[in-house]
Image (cartoon, rainbow, N blue to C red; front, side, top):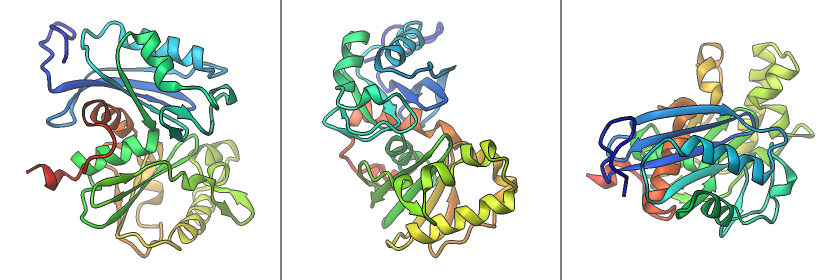
Length: 265
């Protein structure tokens, strides 16, 4: 449960802290689980190098001012197996084999739930946003890399990491991401061509809906209506804040429940 106050306001039991650790920045908030609204909100640059201890220190500094106790959710930019980092995309390789759940729990002095960052975004969009669908939904986040979440009727299939697919001989994560567009100084038509090839590869599997999220959503004026998919395409409701909301949801419910909004009525 939450403590007595957050920023001078009461912190009811229906709020949890969610943290989203990315390759570029760390975002966090106290999330109202009834609506997905975020109250105190903070952002800070991801430490360089983003080692486990450096990231844990940054997260502690973010959370300490918020008097909101209980379990806390942390979304991370890699796949996890029972809390242990299995990959280390866009973050220090020192994470591989490290028990992230135990690390954060020890540093924060409370129980912690950890999950992949795009999985967190997916469950947030399924509960409150545009990924509420009875079929198979693919959520793709474009930012420092490319993340993916697959939900079947609102139930998460964790750790899909479709950004590791190869597209025209390149790993999609570094070829089609928002970072690739910026670092290679691509024109939007060139990036859109790459994105459509990536989507063509992705849709070798069947999806009933595709949701586009991450930092790319802030650039929708450049690509809206130009991405080609067989499945209907929607923009994420929460832009690149969905990971924070999903981390808070995971803190309350775990990652194995059905997160469809329509299932909660």
